[in-house]
Length: 424
Image 1 (spheres, rainbow, N blue to C red):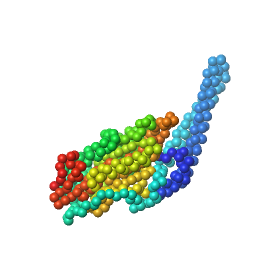
Image 2: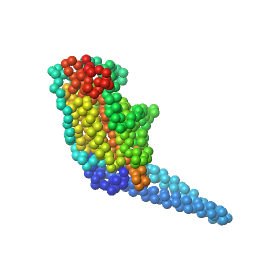
Image 3: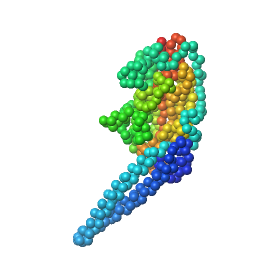
Image 4: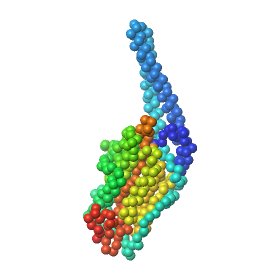
């Protein structure tokens, strides 16, 4: 959530940034924000003055009673009763105005970083890096949804029987490969200094608001109505919310966290060949990395996250590229996002397998996540997160790029985790 003072001090920058996102009604909402804030401030001043006068009169009443001036004390007491009613009215008005202001701020996305280009969709994203040789597959090579049938390692129909489309069942070596990837990703992250956590897979409304999934993405999440809880769309949400409301010491920064979770996304309206097989699921596994950073260091930290993910993909020996997302494709809460895509040789297309984002203070403002700086003042931290990595498309990339006529080879780095070198 943007800070009102930041909007006031940088109105042109905010409007220019939102224009990169093609965000409609930016001027209207910002004008409403500034008017609501002015009205809230005026009401706050009236309330403060009323409470101050009430406090002064209360002390005066005590002195009058003490000096025996009962009649005069009674008159002053009647005045305090009116002031109490007035303060209650002003408090109610202030609460209403504060909620109206917050609701307006919830509508505004983050301001993109200066390096983010204008653009409308993923077609306008900028490729900034590419690495890895695309394999020359044998004649008769198959897309992963055919390979999993051939080797009986993922069963989409069984998942549909149990739950519905988009909930696959992993079997035999497919399940072991899935588990191997999770353990490998976690080991790489903890070796890099990230502390591992196991977190809840359901969140409350406050957690959804804290990281920006609410009130923006209700339709994309599964809601447990009777308990008013949400199934997590990503491990970023519970991991980041561990620090909601915290004031940390500057010396504690950076705080590095990682965790494995299943993720649940409704993906309403997703149809077609581009979502076939493992390409898009309602339930999938992901290992996440989250950083709480000093504002002066957050973009250096983002570069470090990108290098970390590159290192994993190099060890897996998968061809990949990195995109800097344009304004129109950057997520609501992010200031800058780099997407990683692995090349699916059998599908002849790129598949997104990771995003690394800097949210600057946008999430921290919602979370009230602060650190005490050298001057002893509380300052909003910067939050970052990245997929390290999302499993379905990594698995699809391995199955398709490592297929041979004799079977599917396992990347060398994963063999100690799987206990086997080939699926056949």
